[in-house]
Amino acid sequence: MNEPATVEEMLARLRQAEYLADTGLATALQLAVRLRHPLLLEGEAGVGKTEAAKALARVLDQPLIRLQCYEGLDVHDAVYEWNYGRQLLAIRRSESGGQALGDLYAEEFLIRRPLLQALAGGVLLIDELDRADDEFEAFLLEFLGEFTVTIPERGLFRAAAPPVVLLTSNRTRELHDALKRRCYYHWIEHPSPERELEILRARLPRLGAELTRGVATAVARLRALELRKPPGIAESLDWAQALGSLGAVRLDEDAAERTLGVVLKYREDAELVLGRGLAAVVGA
Ligand SMILES: Nc1ncnc2c1ncn2[C@@H]1O[C@H](COP(=O)(O)OP(=O)(O)OP(=O)(O)O)[C@@H](O)[C@H]1O
Ligand SMILES: [Mg+2]
Image 1 (tube, rainbow, N blue to C red):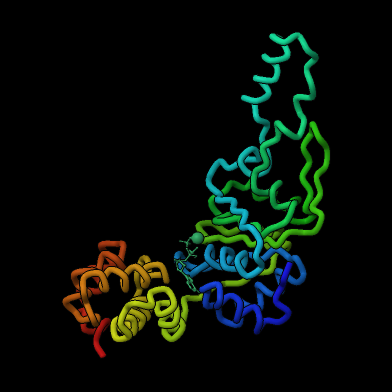
Image 2: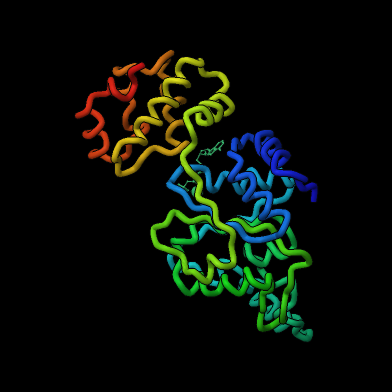
């Protein structure tokens, strides 16, 4: 694996992968890769947690193995499953053909889910762990500690080398201390207006400078208000793109009012912003 040798190189290569990180995040990622230590990323919605893992996989030129967590996620979705259909077919074949039935728990019947796949290498993203239940989190403790998986019918699977593991949480609930103890931790802040502008320019190079600057400034001001859902980078990108597609060359009050639903997703938030006057958000 071609790993960045320094934090500076990590930053530069993330940038090549179209991810503009700050030094803090690049350092956390560098340590996670170098020391093969799981890294827990938290931050508000849309600050770039999922994208950090995708970009890291591109930097390392490794496959991204993603486990999207949800309530009720269990071992069969996360680790492995037996292919019942194929097992049944094998049984039928042996019955009708009269030959001896082979091993129903042979490799060919094993469906590898993300955690088992990750033992063979790659960047493992365990996304939105706060959505999974406590039981799954408890199961993960063992996985993150040993990087082994036990399949009763086949025994112990061990990673040849520990995989790179990133976990994310939106903090809809707190994760357990035991899990946090096994991870490094990094809180991703909203970007500074300067970095946000760089992201907009990198991702939407065809938009005019005045428009992107206006969006970066306005989004920073919106985040300073007491909103229910402050806009993330995803919303800035959407906003700039929407304005561009409407032919706007700058963000003025009129353009902002017409497109407010692209960036604010709660009626209360829109009312608060309109109540204070859009001039405060888009003004020079
Ligand atoms: N540092 C960055 N550089 C470039 N693009 C970024 C950066 N951070 C985020 N983005 C872009 O912003 C969008 C949102 O990012 P992402 O989906 O990773 O957020 P998230 O933190 O995982 O949000 P959620 O909690 O809603 O899942 C994506 O389109 C992503 O490409
Ligand atoms: Mg995400």
